[in-house]
Image 1 (spheres, rainbow, N blue to C red):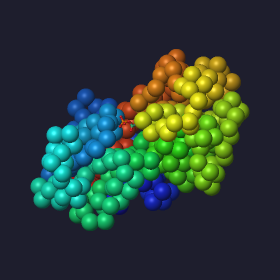
Image 2 (image 1 turned 90 degrees about the vertical axis):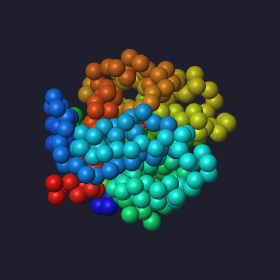
Image 3 (image 1 turned 135 degrees about the vertical axis):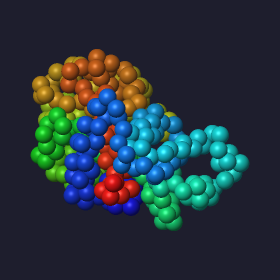
Amino acid sequence: MKHLLGTKDLTKEEILTILDMAAPMKDIILREIKKVPTLRGKIIATLFYEPSTRTKNSFELAAKFMSADTVSISVATSAVQKGESLRDTVYTLEAMGVDAIVIRHSRNGAPHYLASFSKASIVNGGDGQNEHPSQALLDLFTIREHKGRIEGLKVLILGDIMHSRVAKSNIYALSKLGAEVIVSGPPTLIPEHVKEYAEVCYDVDAAIRKADVVNVLRLQLERQQAGLITSLQDYHATYGLTKERVAKGKDDLLILHPGPMNRGIEIDEEVAYSRQSVIQEQVSNGVAVRMAIYYLLLGGAQA
Ligand code: CP
């Protein structure tokens, strides 16, 4: 692997390799001294054109735990503000010796464009409404830790499927590993083509009753076009993960959310912090999975 652009491009074996590699990485971050020399001498840049708390900081921490040097380009204070293009920004980073660039961009395909010319490894930290592969990989890692497998599990992805890069990356990866993917949410937010990969179940309560795992998506208020939902109150009443809905599901239903959460809209606070929720574990596992991604991209095997 030279780049990580999406789970659509990964084979089952590549996904399993990343998940398997993340387990020893998790052992490292549970140590008192969270530092190994694996990527000493490597330089990793984060280039985020959209806001991020989890993805950006966990990619940066993962690099630091592996002894890579890091640079963080803040688009708000960089030469991008003077009109520098994405291509020239990447050439500039390469000229400084950067080995890998983690990019988040609002345009679908921005990481794929960089990968077409960049000498550095490109890691997709989320591109538009296309993919968010590291999020899906950490979701699968968390599910596998709790359930012991992915194959045969019924995984419900609930909410704003249309605008969600997390949903797409999860659907591709889960399908490759043999999970039965169910999607549920408002018909206006479920694209027709998702039926190629997943069972669509508009009745949320019925979907929850079937599920072993539910991954609740953030309602992407910033990407909504007028009229796709009637109101936030209606959305919560019809599609929100409430404690009453969870009570209708399996006792060991596992609850995930990629964050950031709109509490009281797609998920209730008491559900987000319930015994079945692994939302905080997802964040911790994100660092381990991103360490595994670096290891596989940057020749950690030679260390
Ligand atoms: N899950 C996720 O991508 O969160 P951030 O936007 O905080 O990176």
